[in-house]
Amino acid sequence: MRAFVITAPGAAEVADVPEPVAGPGEVVVDVRRAGVCGTDVEFYTGHMAYLHDGNARYPVRIGHEWMGVVTELGPGADASWLGRRVTGDTMLGCGHCRLCRSGRQHVCADREEVGIRRGRAGALAERIAVPASSLHALPDAVDDMLGALVEPAGNALRAAEAALSLATGRRAERVLVVGPGTIGLLAAMFVRAAGADVHLVGVSHASVDFARSLGFTAWLGWNALPDVPFDAVIDAAMDASTAARAVDLVQPGGRVVFIGIASTPSTVDTRELLLKDVTAAGILSASPGLDAAIAGFASGTVDAHPLVAATVSLDHVEAVLAGKHPAGGRGPKVHVDPRR
Image (cartoon, rainbow, N blue to C red; front, side):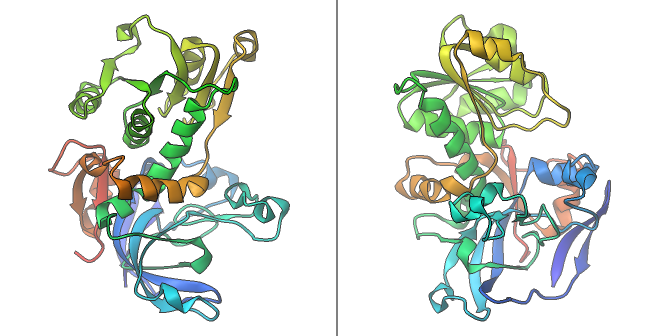
């Protein structure tokens, strides 16, 4: 089958690779849609941290935001999955440690991550093999485009919920989202759906204008922000400088949620957290938020369709990773249809 493979920093190809085989408890899924993510870009540039700490190495078959149809069952896999439209959890824990046994497999030290960690092949391919236990069924109300957005939406939903639920037990009334990319916009959508006043701040005219086109109050640069209290700040940027700024901007007794990962360490003065009685939360994975994200899409509470600028073939993925945005809409997300 055809699959997209990154072979070295700045080098990639669409290669003929062996068909996946479903092992015990696994299924094979025919991929219909897969998203290209900032993590994939980091693999292409060579900046991805896992490449430097031994948890990943080239060649890498990327793709962790996906949906498709189950076409094959491995030994012991539940036959009811056959023929169903599904998406899947990226985080595949060992299943034996204390964290996995308590439902926190997404932070298992020995976890595999689909298309990211420990050689687990990703979904920028015609087919993918994954554990049946990682699958989440997609209702008819969630089309293929939304199905491939469930993974980033699960991350964003968790960030939104963390921001809204203040330590005092009250709900945040006004939330600032730093970084109007895919995760930031999805987080803003879930915050807005919960009834809170949401603002976004970005550094590019294009991203700020796009956020405004979705009905958000968005500001270009820190100096443009109004002098209003923010009960919570979601840092969805990939800039090491924004973490400290988020702590500066949040109100005393508020909450700062970190979901964007910078390529270099961020510095936060913990005295600011302490003296303002601010709670800081980190969001790693979509795992605990996948079902709620599917429900939000199915109900129409959040419509993420405008975020997808274009859907391309495997042959165009390298251009996307190199920063050559395809013709299409203005959204920040590009999808891939491996069948093209």
